Amino acid sequence: TEVKVNGGEAIDKLETGDNSWYRIARLAVNDNRIAEQNKKKRKVATENLSSLVNWVKRKTDSHGNSPPNKTCLETFQTFTDPSLPRNVFVAYPGSGNSWIRMLIEFGSGLGTCFGFTERHEDGGCLLTFFHHFETDFQHSLVGLEADSPSNINHRFANLAYFNGRGILLIRNPFQALVSYYRHRVLGFHSQADITANQRGENIGASANQRRENIGVFYTPEFEEFAYKHVKKWRLVVEDWVKTGDVHVVHFENVLDDKIGELEKMLSFLNLKPAKDRLDCLLQADVNNFKRKSSKLVHSPYSAKLARTIQASIETVDRVLVRYGHTGIPHHKYGQNS
Image 1 (cartoon, rainbow, N blue to C red):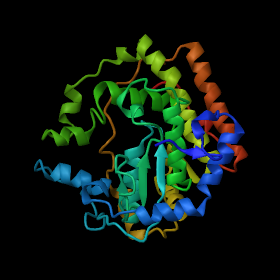
Image 2 (image 1 turned 90 degrees about the vertical axis):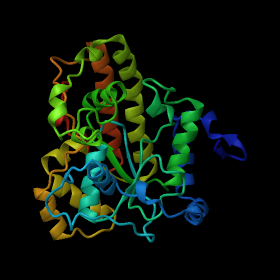
Image 3 (image 1 turned 30 degrees about the horizontal axis):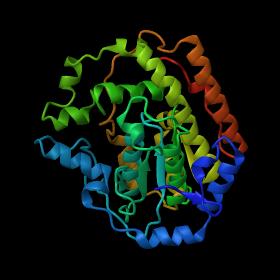
Image 4 (image 1 turned 90 degrees about the horizontal axis):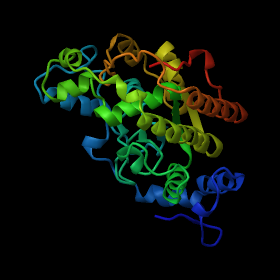
C-alpha cells in the first residue's frame, strides 16, 4: 500500500538519505490518529503465531523428543496479554533474532509474534518480530534495492505501524551477513538442533554428519549479496534510531551478559524481571537455533568490500551516539565467522 504525504505526494518520491524523509516519518510515528486507528484494528494473535517458546515446544514434542529446556519447565510457560501495546522487535536477518526472542519470552513469560503475522493480528504479544524490509528481502538473495519505491513505502509503513517503538537488535555485519547468507543457501536454522528435531532426528547428531560447503562464501554471488545487504543492515538501524523510540541491543553484549541485557530490555518494556525466571534462565539451554557450522578458514570479504562494510559500521556508530545510544562495541567486532 502506497503511503501518501504532503496532500498526496508519495513518500517514495523523497530520498531516504534526505532529512525530509525522516522528518515526515517522525510526524507519522507521533501522529496519535494513526496510533488510535491501528489500536482499533488490532486482533488477538492466533496461538501458533504468538509464542516462539511454545512453537519450539510443539515442534520438539511432536517428534517424541523432550522439550529443549529441561530446567524450570513450569516456569517457562508463555502467555498473551491483550492489554499490551504494540512494540516491534526489529533486526537484520542473521543477527541472533530467535535466540534473543527466546530470552525475552523466558524472562517475561509473555509471547512474541512471528514476523509473518498478518497486519493487526498480533494482539496480546509483547513484541512483534520484523526484518523491516519488503518480502523480497527474505525470499531473494539480493532482492530489491534498499531504496526502491516498494521498500521505501514498506519501511515508512512499518515505522508508522509500530509508532516507532520497540527493541532494535544490532549484530556485527561481518558476522550477520555470513549468517543470513547461510540461511538463504542452506535453509533457515540449518545445522541447528531445532531443525534436526523437526525432522525427528536425534538432536545434535545430524549436525556433525552434514557438512556445509564454505566455498559459497568465496564467490562473486556472495560479494554481490554483501554489497547490497550491508546497506540494508545500515538502514534498519538508521530508520529506527532516527525516527523512533527504541532500546538498542548489541548482540555481542548479550553474549557477554545475557541476564544484564535482558533486564534492560524488560525495563524498557515496562516489565519487572521475575527473579525465579532469571534464575531458571541462568541454568537453561536456549541454543536451539544456534548452528553447528564450519568455521571459515579466512575472511570472505575482499579488501574493498571490507572497507565498504567498515564505513557502514562507522556511520551506524555515529548515528547511535548522536541519538543518545551506546555506540558500536568495536572491540567485539571481527571479520571471520
